Amino acid sequence: MLAVRGLTKSIGTQEILRGVDLDVPKGETLVIIGRSGGGKSVLLKHLVGLMQPDAGEIWIEGQNIIGLSERKLAAIRRKVGILFQGGALFDSMTVEENIAFPLREAGERDSKVIREQVNEMLEVIELEGQQKKMPVNLSGGMKKRVGLARSIIRRPSCILYDEPTAGLDPVVSDSINRLIRRLQERYHVTSVVVTHDMKSAFHIADHIAYLHEGRVYFHGTSAELERSGDTLIQDFLLGRSEGLP
Amino acid sequence: MTRIFTGVGAVVVALFIYVGEVVVLAAETFASIFSQKIRWRIFMDQIVEIGLRSQLVVVITGAFTGAVFAAQTFFQFNKLGMGSAVGAVVSVAICRELGPVLTALMVTGRVGASMSAEIGTMKVTEQVDALRALAVHPVDYLVVPRALAMMLSMPLLVAECIGVGIAAGYLVAIGLLEINGTYYMANMVRWTQMRDIVMGLSKAFCFALLIVFISCHKGLTSREGAVGVGKATTEAVVDSSLAVLICNFFLTMALNIIFPAGYQ
Image (cartoon, rainbow over all chains, first blue to last red):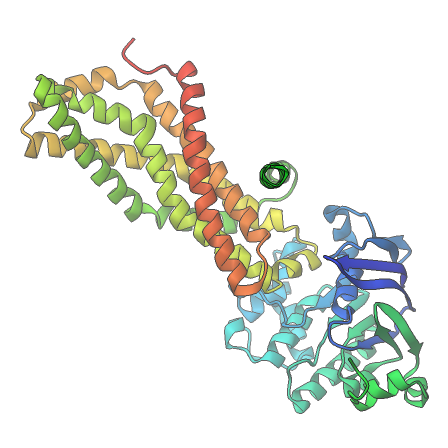
């Protein structure tokens, strides 16, 4: 479904990605973990063509997306939904208009069809009755849910999540984790989740990749990660900062 | 010495890159207008924002410019016994220069700043990335409706400014300066030609393109959060204003060949 080969990216003089290789089979959930500023979000943005790498390849459903023009990328982007860290809702639109946006842009004009699909999405994200609210009146968790609904309303085959639980309290974080799980079970989508919330990672991951210094340092199952005797991984899992620069 | 040349060279290169980026944005916008669907609802919203909400600013600008220009011209011309020629001077000057330039500067301050700030805020809050991720090209969605609305609104706003300016000049000349109304009107009609109005409206169209592409480009390339948006907004106003003033000179020289000034 999704493969990354030798991806490198520098911003200014800083090397962010130094040759990332990843494979995400269809229907699986890969969680990418790593320290803050380690390039996780940069990697995620490359996966949907929002950033262009210095070198490397990204294959989505058999097509290398590197070098494609913005207009040619549109066809790929219809297959891939992304949840941004802050939701990235259009602040001039209501919740309903935000969720309906991809449908309207796809040419759907039947307001009954749009309303039905928006209501279905609101039910999935458990925000029924919030259609008329503006993004400014939503909490952080609600914004992420609405952003997620907007990403999945056109049923993408792959969903990318950028820090879905960052800045949320444990209860709301748990509800987002359950929502991600529910989406996987209901729509059988391939998911890539970037997070440093380990509880969330263990809850939703089929596989976990640990990104360190711009490379994939570890790739395996949750159980393999927990069993790993590697000091770097154990320090990250246990939140130990001794010995760090 | 080498340092001076290097510094100047860097500024020139940066200027060429900047102008190139704005030209590429303009080319993408025109390509999109002819090949992609146009968001008419956003276009109508922008017509309201640019055209309707600029009414007060444009009317006041036109009225007081016409009034003060009539008064100043009269103070000089009256010494030569040419008071009745004020109407012709005011009318031609407002049509060819003052109307388009002052309207463009006011629209830059009001609309260019708002465009740049709005798009810049969308950029730094990842809303532009969200558009791209949802397979919507930001030029199609953000720039095209604004460019079309600006291309339609600016000539109309300039026409309004010209009309109000001439009317205000007339009222001041006749009401306050006691110039003979018949001679004033006769001279004005004799010396003001259709080509003066066409020149003003042609300039308005060119200024519309400058303002919209510079402002949208500044918004789309905005960085560094709130500070970046503030900087982009300021730069949009300053760059658009300078572009209007500089291009006005070249437009005047070029358009004067097509629409020569004076009674013929």
